[in-house]
Image: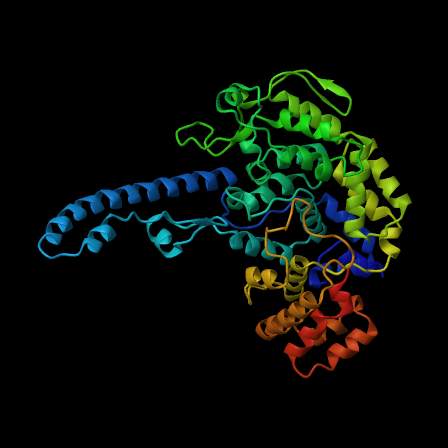
Length: 485
């Protein structure tokens, strides 16, 4: 049980890299907290670079359209003359029709072939997925990747909405990964004030009604980000805030936006624009905050990060995600105390979770989400499972990459992924993946080796009876030990 929890609950399944866990499960996991933070080994664009590239593509597309319109106007005059000699008026109309601007979907131009030739490579989110799967398959600190997935779900953004689609992958690399073993306050600040979050929750469109811009344009306040900061990021839905607090926090957040002016020194970066900010003092959770421009949100966030409700909500969600939705009150309270005593030190909270006996004795009841299923398979194979397509595979299994259905993120209940369609798609994927990748691992040798103790005697017996390497690998991937953690 301890070994299984070391590589399952706190990791991404078993591989030869996880052999140290056989002799000292807790020590193996605890040591990973002191390892340097790893990052995907790939040339992936920053959020500001992606936004700049988007504006450049739009500018080029606009210039092309204008050129086509100008050319069309000239052709129309010629064809109009020809039409008087028997030509078709329809030909002239066709010549004047402007060419549509290529659309943006998930950070890609729809006319991808043309963009590759004329605009250079277009950054795609699948590049982010492959880069992460390669890291997950080979890292010696799989706990860090489990933490990365957890906190990326806590602060959710999605590719399904506007400009945020471009930077969702960069968001995880810039606002989540650097802080998984740091202070919660620092992660929250980086996540909330990131271009992806500001776009995803519409803060770029939020203007203080009494601000200079608001008085001129009669722009309105958008409460989406303020609500989710309180409900999902810090206090929790039962954290004791009111609708008045949501509105007040939304006014505090006005002015935080993304600079998309091409010739600006801060082009592609998050900026604070005083002229959009709601003036005057604000009261949140009974505390009055004096007008301080950009400093207002930083002051409020400091208090939210240190609030007892935040400690309870954040650590409760973490315990349930790693152990079980039925985790004991005593474990939740002990983690919340560590959070408060350490000023939100996530490394200290994670260490406390590792030390808790409950984390090692509770049965593995949580079905792995598809993203973890792919990562665990890659770890087993020793390389990223790039065949079949990971992006298409996640879509088929119900967890499209970087596309959570709401700001709440992906469901974390123990059996959230137990559906008839979901189970069928797992079986189909496992069989296809095994057919394409069985030559990368000797399954029978693995289950007979020291790391084979990850699997029960019955599971190992069934795997050995596989009629082919492909069938043996598929049986292993669909075993209870591999599917649950």
